[in-house]
Length: 65
Image (tube, rainbow, N blue to C red; front, side):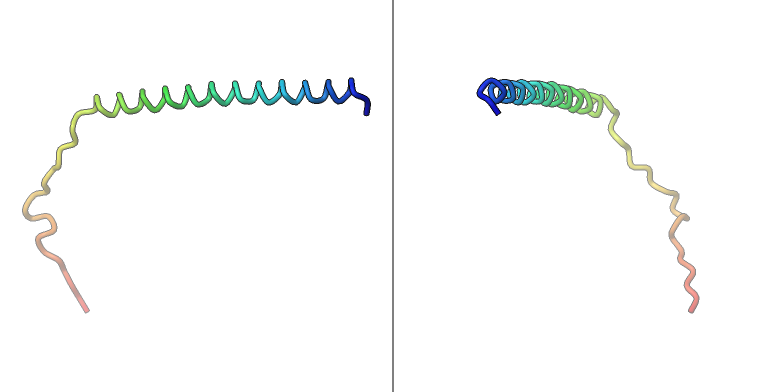
């Protein structure tokens, strides 16, 4: 392969690598934004309240051998 061909191949590889890195950075920013939005939505949810079952539920267990 001649010098010009090697130069073109290296230039193309460098460009592909730079494009790949740029796409990964955009994906990371998008993922961080989604995570932040999810955290905000979870903070906005009302607190879960524990519901106590009536006293008769689960008070007796039938066991047969």
